[in-house]
Length: 321
Image (cartoon, rainbow, N blue to C red; front, side, top):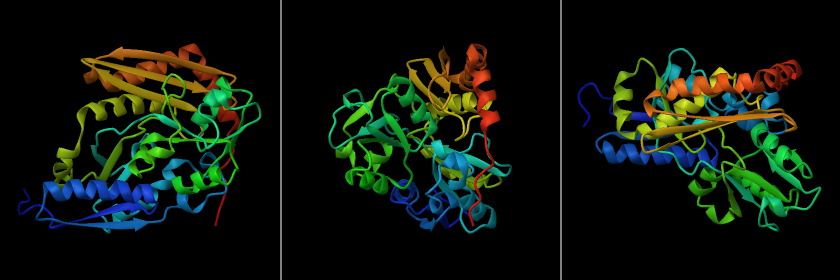
């Protein structure tokens, strides 16, 4: 229960998309149940990642664009905590900030959405598939080279509208977002991790605050789901060691079965022609070291060469006013 050192009010910073607001309200409701005497306020903000929709994320600075404005609000004291999709959180947290909690994971899989076709392998040659990530694109090109993959930006509703307008034969979205928005009926098929390995942190929410706010970190403890946090930590350790970002087509997915954590990962070229994958098992207590070791294994199998080529092809971020 709140005590004299606990704030009476907590302001929650969030992006203003429907999904981000759902996530912030979900956390607010959980906190309100835990601390009924406290006041909670949602503060919606538009980030640069939301404003620039005509260019792929890899060309405008990556997913970190979705959280910089929120972190500025935390630093300025205009907000106390920020709620993020963990797959949008850069691998290295900026100095002065901390993840106070990682919530229990929703469905981590990718979802195949189409109005005409039941499965990915049912799409005829030349079909246009929309996706927002290089990770999905590389896997699609590797497994279905007869398909056309085109970039798809915008919030979930915008992407679905473009599908409904006939701009795409199918699109690939995160299942978690569709389920959270009450749009599970739009999922045509769920893609197994063997077919489309999820993004690092996909399906989990992170609660960020300033590192010096020990009061908030303590308040968030009941929302911290340790099994999910260990899986996400393993995935992020792997991605961090590989220099993971929006410009690197890679996936990482960990699961805990009993006392064993299984981490799968891959690195690929954007065209999917070169792909290196591996997996590693170990104790959940060793999640970070499992991630770091899997990254070493991937590099030894050829990921290093892929990363060097990707870096040599990288271009300066596109400038927008």
